[in-house]
Image 1 (spheres, rainbow, N blue to C red):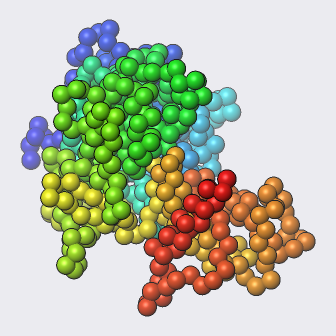
Image 2: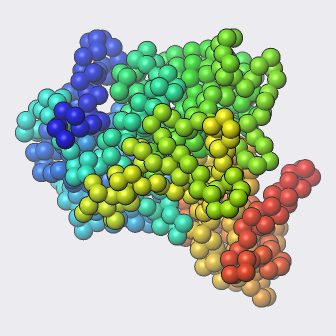
Length: 562
């Protein structure tokens, strides 16, 4: 294929460099950059990386919170034909080390938020360490630590926006997602997948150069990254917050007249709660588009969201990292009086929820979906194929990445169970692998169970997800105790009782999870002592569906008694 026909995410630089000289495209704190200034920063950084010695196909690990510098790094690495591997800043050092060893980066770049990682995590392949934003005082005299400004000032050649390169197989990003074994997997994503996904968001949501986009989602996640690319492609303005918190987000929305952002149910719940804390006086009429992912908005949460953002079209999206974000889109609310797509009309709510599942809408234009039926039922495994599908998992595809199954047109199993109705809408029934979606984060039960089983007082454990308004799903653990161990919820302070009694409690197990470097969002919010054998199938596998139903009943009983 001729180079001019090959997609590359840095093709957006030509558009950004041609916007009006006084048009601001990034806002981060007090820093404002025009399109030309932002592009110049990307090109200087790319030139510095070339002089440093980065080559096509080299992996660059990035550990940082959201910023304009983060966007620069993503594009600069892609520009020189490198592959960016964002590391989750919420990871423990142990998890970060696992990720580093998996992707084998030649360069690690961190910001001040993750500066402790710059010496604490390593890989045999690592050659350089860079501080993204500014030189930390603690590293001021360390000649082995570079900074972004050093690289920008010592570029070999200032490239033009059209001099970009491709990595082998046209890979550009490795996004991590947890596996059912608890080990992270690196999803290898191509330029084509990101551009196709970005164009789908532009078409389905209606993004344009007039938009002011608030970065509520972290760039380390595929949802935040793909939405950011959509905004770069249309030349919109980016307002970047290091991390999401409801008060700061609402303040930024009013200050910068934000027109759009993405959210997960947890974020929307926090925005609603903050709105109530302010006496329900906040109304953000500038917001016109909200895209929700990471789980369905409850009826109550959607109605509350409309009160805060009365002029916003609210959509939901369903997808996964392996498909470069969204597979389907659905309009939940459209404020236009003439709209026929709103499910909220005349204050009457038509639920998208039903006992058999949740409606997640129709596939995006480029997405093929089908249900793999194993019997006469209309329900089965959800499969997809198209340019949005990953190249493969990193470590399994480097040698022959261009010839991976996805590029040959094979169907990808999403891991979800569902059905397609007579109108072409996809309904989610459940997750074939038991994955829990809590606060927009994926939690795999096997990983949490493995940690709990290491405790000397735990005989067996089953972790499941229970519906919860704010988180979408709450992580709940059921534990069977070993002989002579006692359960008590009176030990609420988590004090060490190991020298006195063989005692366990919810707080003791939470503290134990923290000492085992389990990331915060994976630690169960509730624990139940299970006094009987877990239900199993004929082959000895735990019937998680039965456990989930019983736990949901227990949680409902506890909540009603409060």
